[in-house]
Length: 121
Image (tube, rainbow, N blue to C red; front, side):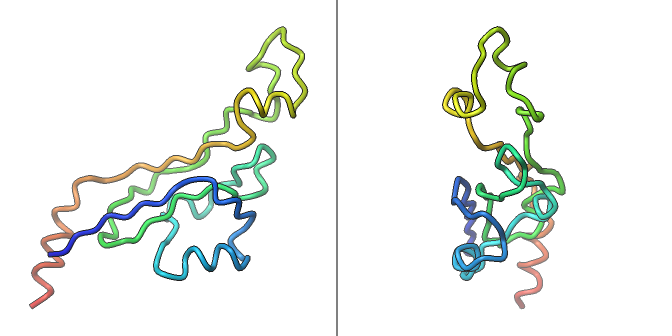
């Protein structure tokens, strides 16, 4: 069986999933794991989906139904740098102007592998 696990992640500067850029990136089969479909945006305002985790699903159960955006910002940067009066822009150079995405990956897909082998007959 030809197995390929393709996971693509990073800052694609894609503001939304309706535009031509997102459609081009996903036109060859890359998909968003289900757990990220309802995740908020990854900019500090949580309105834009600049960052992506995409996969080419050989095994549909490769991703658990767990994932999201890690909001270290929580609407204010002051608690992260107490006593240091940074502006929001200065803060983004110290840490980031994007919130990280996360997803839990299942490594035990033996049941699905077996099903695919049996159904190839």
